[in-house]
Amino acid sequence: MTTPRAHTLHRCLPLLILFAALLMMTGCGKQTYRPTYTQQSSVASGSGAAIAATAKSQLGRPYVSGGSTPSRGFDCSGLVYWACASNGISVPRISRDQASVGQRIPRGSLRPGDIVVFKIPRSGYHTGIYIGQNNFIHSPKPRSRVRIESLSVNYWKRYYVTARRVTRR
Image (cartoon, rainbow, N blue to C red; front, side, top):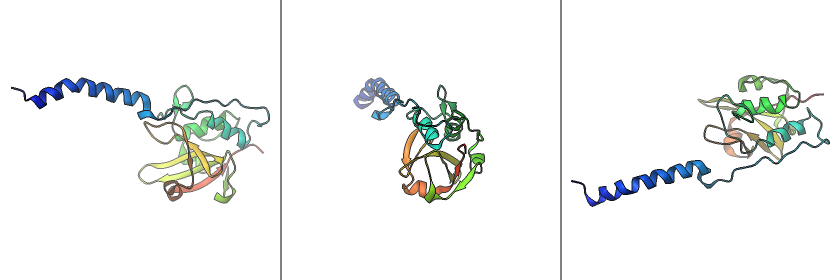
């Protein structure tokens, strides 16, 4: 015999499942970013500004492990790899290797398009692209999207390792 409480729960369970599914599909009410960038001729392909702008065009794109294309989505190193390749610059595909490519840049000398590198305990290397004003763009983790964050956040300050410049000369 069921209790009134169990009967109510049994009746509400389908509604709770539906509500949870709707929340997952809407990102819990977070705004979905729609890329609006179109490259202007004043930004030279291969320049740091072009790399940053290319990466910014993917704001809101989903994180996908192993992803390195707009149609599939991106992991962190995939976004860096794609943004650089889209501007004629060859970089390694893996974060650990991106941490040593190009020229080492002191943190105080960052320019848009530089690769910022973090080493997260138990996770390994993480990369993003500096976009100016102490901000960088990256594809952070599963169930998230490409987004902009500040290097001033304690988490990123704690795990920052280096920056690399890979633009054409």
